[in-house]
Length: 514
Image 1 (cartoon, rainbow, N blue to C red):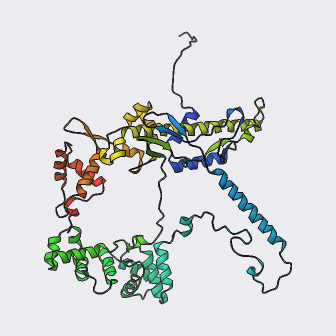
Image 2: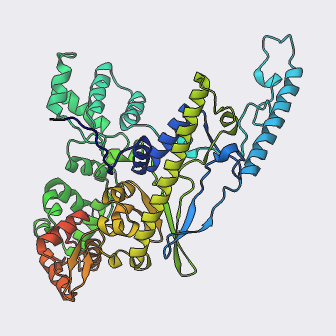
Image 3: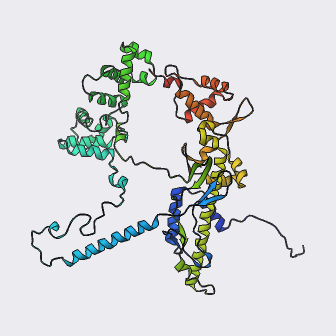
């Protein structure tokens, strides 16, 4: 075989580092993106957060300061540009506060006495309050009320606090500690009395089981009411006993909770009226009393910090046209540091210059990747709004079927890119805040030859069940017939699947007295 040299021309897709970075930033959520930006800011000295109202003048065209662009749903093109306003007043206010506090601190430092009496107190020498030494925080300054006033106390901490205020013998105190340790976050005992008793025998060999039960009854009187119960029935009975005498329906409610709780769970009202020998109005009063109790008393104590969803895209209607724009608060406004960038010398190959040049190039790539992420997110959101205008106007019942392929064709991108864009990204609409993937759904054929979205079918099912007769709830077969009357062909098992996805109980569990 003779060796030879040949020249061939061809095209191949290569995943450059810039492309890999752009793809990785594209699939990040808002929180992950903020963490990624902070990490880059910490590692790259060329990048900085822009706090001015406008972009700085940088040499060689290296300032890539991007802001949120507003796109019209009819034409995927920018129609206006939002600026970063309101930055000067806050800066001036903070500097004035700093100067005044520094002056006050210097004035007090000049009057510090050299010799102090033994019984001198701090308030006799130094002025207290936010305007005294300048060290205290001003009262009008913004405070994080959620972190300062939020409760981080657990259920065990709350029970131990009450235990320390209750007079007990050392043996009873140890038993109470074992009982509190066995309480789960819902407030129920996760261990039986026998297990707790056997676990204490090694430390107290002469302990009797009745002593554990007696201490358990004392712990069950702690707040919240119904805590440390062995089962749901016992917890509800404890709560009923805390109610005042003469509460309407108390006797019937006590009998139901004590003996017929399973029949109540199955909505067998005829059996309850026959067993308890009560009328319908009396049973309804007792059931309402039981429903006012808390089946999980421990959840009222503990960390209930609310997690808020920050939307990536806002959709508003202006002049009868839907406008789509990015949320400018999801990421800080970045720019390249002009002082460091001016130190880069083109012909210098020293290690310091190489370090600066590499970081400058990485900063440019990162800013371009962020800009590409924003543009792609805005294009996809605009296409979704174009397709789902009926949802924005009338709600979920007007949702149109849409898959990733439909949006990919409109924006001329691959389906995998659309999937990355719509993952963990949220859109704020007049109907509420939804994840972008919420707008994608399969379709069901109708009798007229059209298509109906599965999301719209779920909304119709929810509306039908909300308007049903509570004495005779709609079965899945009946809902199928009602949908067929509207021209929507859906199987009964599909209705059951949609109903379960909406967390709606079957018809026999939805039955209730009116």
